[in-house]
Length: 263
Image (cartoon, rainbow, N blue to C red; front, side, top):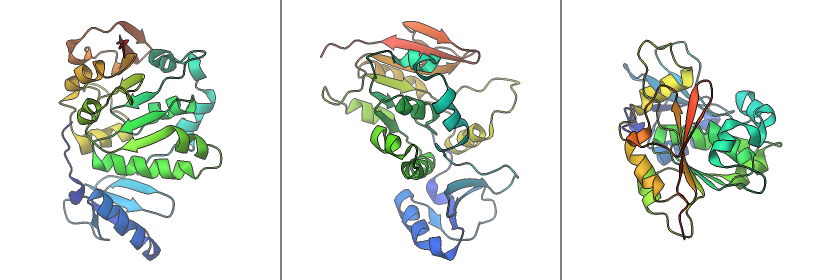
């Protein structure tokens, strides 16, 4: 995945003077520019409020982008999404007596990973983009303080900011996950309607996922039981590799590759 924006190109603006120290710490951690001015031509900026860290567009009226596991769609999926009976849960191997450990190698905003964690899995998130990782880390920290889901998040979700292929190659027999989940950037579809706001920003910030095919061969030799690839129905198999099983919903397809490594 080739990043379009380096963190140093994005200013970090603190909502109030009392947040300047926190903003400075974030800037140092993620390589941002901590100031309260936006240079001409800057398309996006980070904005730190008392509530959360946001990514804002400097040229459009679209709302801010942030990660929130505590309300809205994520809470609805946790409470009413269907539990282990939902298709994505079946794809990764949830069933009675089996709660797999999962490595989400393309974490993004971790919406599916939160579902896995809500079902009891230990989930490791890998995110290479420092811009996305900063937003994701902020969302995780806020969720850890939430009275209803705080313990679930702190116990079941961990985030690592690194390259997914490098991380997978470093896995050994002791720490390999049961399942590796891949959800690379969906290929753009000609004449398609505008995708939702978060994904437009994601594609703009991160760029095209040009090395997505390289993820699968590495994942196949590292996952203990299976690799699951989330794709739109119109997309080809990742790395032109036929899966063991295809599981389809109205919009998505889960390509399941059984590995069954013998340790």
